Length: 194
Image (tube, rainbow, N blue to C red; front, side, top):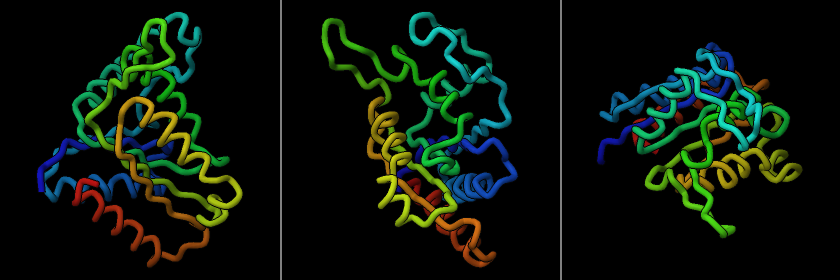
């Protein structure tokens, strides 16, 4: 298996959360298998999450966002670990995406065209998300809206493909042995670089 450069982004504001443990498990599995791994914990960096002027005027990046963009450019495989809150991802993660995945950086609109260039082509992705609702409920009632938004409307829009999804449901009701199995399955994904 070819070694990959992997960036693991923790979208949960609290690194001590179960999502934090999942991110660490993935990174551990990847590192032990010989992949190059970097971690970015969004709750531990300082940045303004709003685009004050939209795309009309660029808000200068803070040093943490400059470093994050360098890591995104460096990696072959981008892993996002986050909870599904209100059917989608945390506000902190949305703010990070708004600030970093900009026109001219992650994608570029073509002049006089409705098409765009996908500037992050050649990278693959993995979404690892937790939720309190059962997986079937998220699929049946919400049609996996958060997964689809992140996968199709964000990552694939910018050229990251394929993007695989690993979701863990009914988190509040899981017993310690079930949580341990989840951590092991994510560590195994990391070792495979998937």
